[in-house]
Length: 103
Image (cartoon, rainbow, N blue to C red; front, side, top):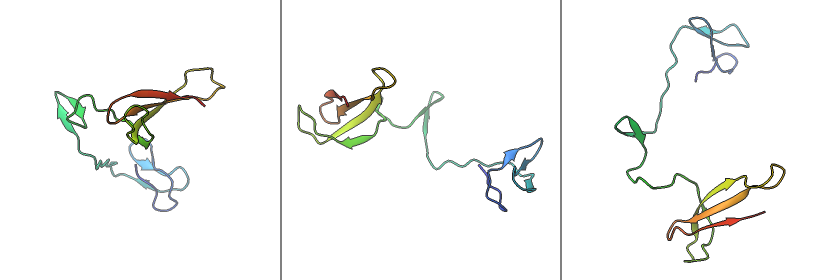
């Protein structure tokens, strides 16, 4: 993503170049996308971790009722009507016990 050096707006692609929708700036340079994350590839599929079943969920401080571990994975699901609060699910990082919390 490139930004206009004059006004700071995001440059949009016009016919053969990139231009600013606010001012008259245009650029003929190609947009270069740079990623700082390195990924391993296996048979054409991007793999971030070597572990197959490792969840990619945020970890929060929540006490497990089964093993008393203080770290758990966290996600939410809309299990009831749209005007009601969503349900929070937790999974212990140590014993993998799963529980839910209603609001």
